[in-house]
Amino acid sequence: MLGSAIWPVTLECGDLILRPIRYRDRREWSEVRSRNTRWIGPWEATNPLPGTDLPTYAGMVRSLNQQARQDTALPFVITERLGGAGRVPAIVGQLTVSTIVWGSARMATLGYWVDESRAGRGIAPTAVAMATDHCFRVLGLHRMEINIRPENQPSLRVVRKLGFREEGLRRRYLHIAGDWADHLSFALTAEEVPEGLLARWLSTR
Image 1 (cartoon, rainbow, N blue to C red):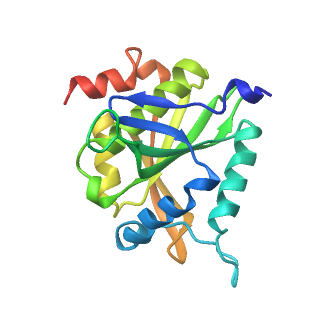
Image 2: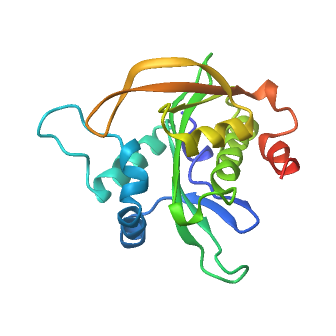
């Protein structure tokens, strides 16, 4: 196991910062999520077992921290210095690299959401590019995968802007908003972005 060699870590690009999610983020994180219920709700993971709720905020952070200690996840919050340098970064979303597989596979899955009030400003693609570059260039992963519901146009725009390849439809892939939902699978390998995904993305803006 790699242990502390992979976590915790903080990634920065201008006013955008990816940092570890913390227990003390509960109030701010919950306020952002509550404000974005309509925006995020249709894509929200649910538990398929009847009568079983998703974990509380503390339970979520505890589980994510455990996965990070086991070298299978990188649980970030997306923060932004609203108003420029010197301002305390505010939470504007969440990004988790999960299901990290080492050995001969060296791959992971990435998921994210961004505050609707900050959508369309390049935050999501920049955050995804930052995390993907870290996984490829620092951790030595080979493949990053993102799975998105076909109806989720904002997320589809993110992966298409970044050049992730569409690899097909996964039938009833995840339990979302109370039912099993199809997802489109997108992927990128390290060889496809030798210059770095972030550099390629920023060069197109």
